Image (cartoon, rainbow over all chains, first blue to last red; front, side, top):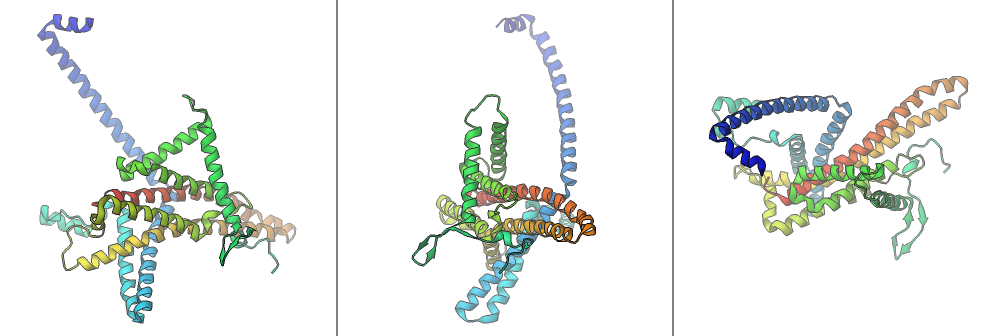
Length: 134
Length: 252
């Protein structure tokens, strides 16, 4: 309460000077905070990269994703063949589909950014073609 | 057949402790069932006793429980958003069950529940059933849009949908096979190297000297197995969260 009264009595000129000072201080703090954040992010990224055991775990994960797709495809194909009596053909077709599903599993689990970008048409043609290659 | 003490597969054998037969079905209480009960009992007892005091400044046990809670809650919130928090009891139960079962298996002479495919497959099917049932309940038939990715040419659509369906069906397989294979392979490797120590040291002085190398290997592998036990429980829980996300937000 008392503080509010003081500020009102000091008048508009002093108030403007105060805001400017506060703004400068806030900008300085923001800059410092951004610097800190960048450093923290870099550090955590470096830590994440150095884990060998995490690499092994990631590799096993991707391998099992891929194999599971093929196993399920083969199982579905074999089941259809057994039911319909079309022995090799269902197995052949569904093995291929299972292979595709395995590849899709791996691509999907590597990250959502690796799925084919739907917005390539918005970008200039030169850039989008480079994206397609990488 | 005579039981060889260094047989690496023997640890996975199922023994009937209390034989129960109902009709033609075998409902025997086995060592696997015993360790499942033990896992649940230890988890429940630990969580109950550490949270009984509920101090404002947590004790050691209470901190462990609180850290596990926050860890799981953050994992679920990151993967499935705040709407996923209603599945917290489910995810937490699965995470704790797999973690404690894996760690219990690290005791010598203990049975590792998660080294049997049928157990991990049952867990994975539970997850997928919850995903499918909740997805259909929440979104009705719109949930099947999950299998139709956006921006696909109409000509390719049947093929892509087929691939997406096979990919979805392969999820419980990869989820269960990963956990099972990691635990099985780890425990067999451990047992094989420990068996080297036993059979080499039976050869006399030179053999005892030579058995130091596999012994060092066993020590290193034990540390690795503890890591794998925790990591696989984490991976199982994270993937559960991601699949639940598909049930809650099938659009993306």
